[in-house]
Amino acid sequence: MATDKLNSKEKMALKARAHQLHAVVLIGQHGLTTEVITETNRNLDAHELIKVQVAGDDRAARIAIAEELCKATHAELIQHIGKQLILFRRKENLAE
Image 1 (cartoon, rainbow, N blue to C red):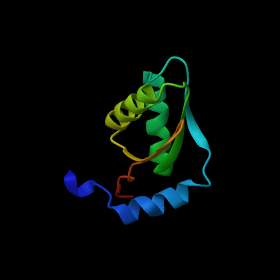
Image 2 (tube, helix red, strand yellow):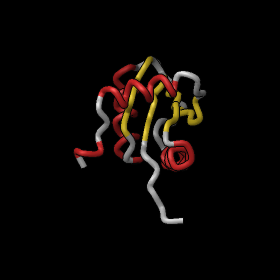
Image 3 (tube, helix red, strand yellow):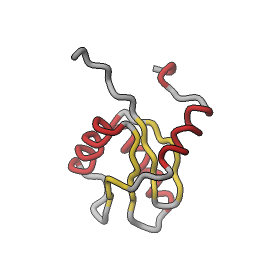
Image 4 (tube, rainbow, N blue to C red):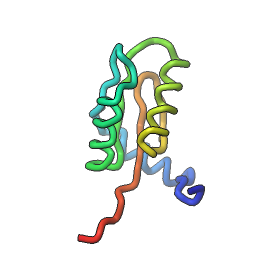
């Protein structure tokens, strides 16, 4: 699993790609729910690279949500700026 981790150059390229993206998942006052995890998985499956908007002013809570969301979706946190998270998960290569 350690080989799946992105190196710094790959992360920089993903940050540049994510700059123009809009948040496709919003985490509101109810926090990280199963619906949020399902929607995040759906968007990662479709796009690989997504932005997530996290409500609330508590930085520690936002970091905890980011870590829990990454663990639940098997995604990698590329960047955390303020209330926005950038997540990445490689699409699985399925035989078509």
